[in-house]
Amino acid sequence: MRRFNLRIGFTASMEEYQPNFLLGLVPEIEKAGFDSVWASDHFHPWFHTNAAGGFAWVWIASAAERSRKLSFGTGVTCPTMRYNPAIVAQAFATLDSMYPGRILLGLGTGEAMNEVPVGCSWPPFKDRVKMLEEAIMIIKKLWNESFVDFKGKYYVLRRANLYTRPSMPIPIYVAASGPTVAELAGRLADGFLTIPFEDAHYRDVLFPAVERGAKSVGRSLEDIDMAVEVYVSYDEDYDAALRSVKCWAATLLPFMFKYPIYDPREIESYGMLVGEEHLKKAWMIGTTPEDHIKHIERYIGLGFRNIHVTSSSPDERKTIEMYGRHVIPYLKSTYG
Figure 1 (cartoon, rainbow, N blue to C red):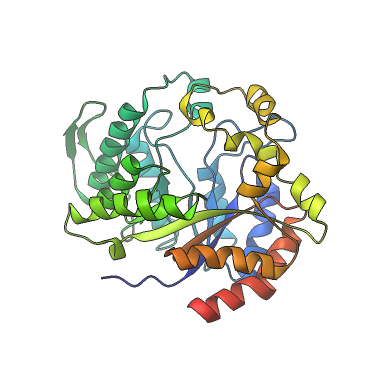
Figure 2: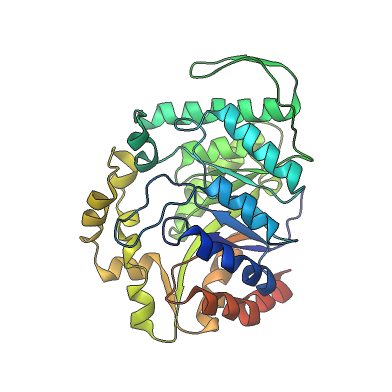
């Protein structure tokens, strides 16, 4: 049984902020006491107006140069369509060889907005799950074996060999919101990453699925690093904090993840149908440090030990500084 210390990460929202702005935040994120930075890996953003679209892998390399302690990873990469899984393996092996022990790899089944614009098809969910499973197998083989041959349903390797290997095992996190991929995470990944839901969905659906997957390979739920992304906005002015998250409205529409909708202008138009009450439920709009502490404590109480803070605040520097002065010291001293 493994014991995971409490870790608190910060999201580099590549869809919302230009890369240079995010690079400027890295020293402040490190100074505040965050443990990691997770960069969103998108081709298209979730909205059109004032959006950004930096390439996460390039950004991670540059950001890692600007810190000494922070870990960096993707939240998350789809390793099955616009990226060949062998190239994902090569890229993250290279990153870890340069920044030993500070690289993470988050993986998921993908979103149409990132795959369809570059000419990829949008397979049914069951196929995307199988593609993800093959991709994880390929990535692990290339990190650990030499001159790999692989013949799957979706991918083929012919004496493929990485001449730059990871300095140490790179933790793989699999993101899921339902039981099928959650079980895959328990079976093949080091960590499980999910998003906000009602408590019952974790207790009755996701956690049992991760545990089933873990038990199928001789592990337990305690062997899996349980991570959750929390959505927050901070400002002393509640209305300003609420306005700041409206750009993310389309992420609350389930059909956005199922159908091949990929034009950010169209995505943004659907987001306009989402009312403020729905945004308030999905995003923690907090005007005090205590609001943020209480919100994160809920997830710690549910069993998460890796909290991945996605902030869409009016002033990110102020938010980072507030977390560094109040939220992180309290949570780390209380929950370790």
